[in-house]
Length: 93
Image (cartoon, rainbow, N blue to C red; front, side):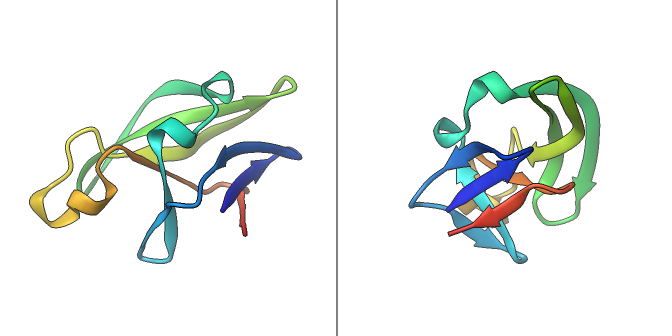
C-alpha cells in the first residue's frame, strides 16, 4: 500500500493494518522528510490518545494529515508503532 499526497509517496508498506477502514502503516515505512510533529491531539475511547503529524511536500502543508497513537490501549495493540493518514492523502495499492 502507498500513502500519496501532493503527488509524492509519503509511506509505502506491504504490512499495513486496517482498522475502521483506515490503513495504518508501520512507522518505519513513513518517509520522515515529509512529516513534522503537530501539537494536535484527540482521544479515541478504545484506541487511546492520538498525536498528529503535519505533512510537507514541495512547500505545501497538510496540517494534521497523519495520526498515530504513542501509547495504544490494550484493545489496539495491532496499531502500535503505526501511522494512518487522511486530509486528502490517497491510499492506493
